[in-house]
Image (cartoon, rainbow, N blue to C red; front, side):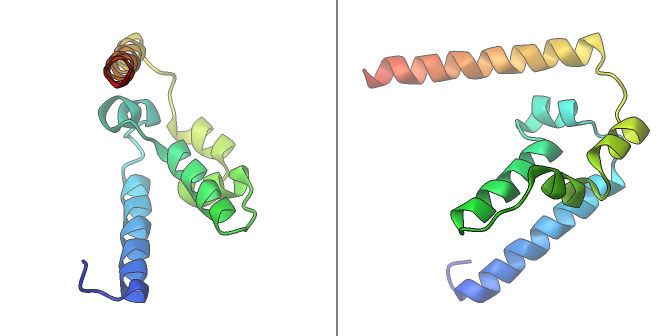
Length: 113
C-alpha cells in the first residue's frame, strides 16, 4: 500500500474498518469475550480506539457515542439482546489468556533490564 497516496490509503482503511463493523454486526453470536480470547480485542476496544484517535486529532468523541457507532445501537440494548453471560469455560479461557500475556510481558521486561 506504499504506492498509494495518503488520501486513498485513508479511504481504503476507513472502508475496511466499516466492513469490519458490518462483519461484526452480521455475527452478533461472536461474543466480545470470544474476541478477547482469540484476538485480544473486542467491540469495546474498537470504541476506545476511536475515542483515542479523535483525541490524537484534538477532537472530542464520547465513549458511549463511539460504542453506539461500533455496536449499531446503544450498548445497553445490544448487551440485553445479544450478550449472554460468559460461561465458566469462556471465563477460564480469558483468564488463561490474560495470564499468558502477563507472563510474556514479565519475560520481556526481564530481558530489557
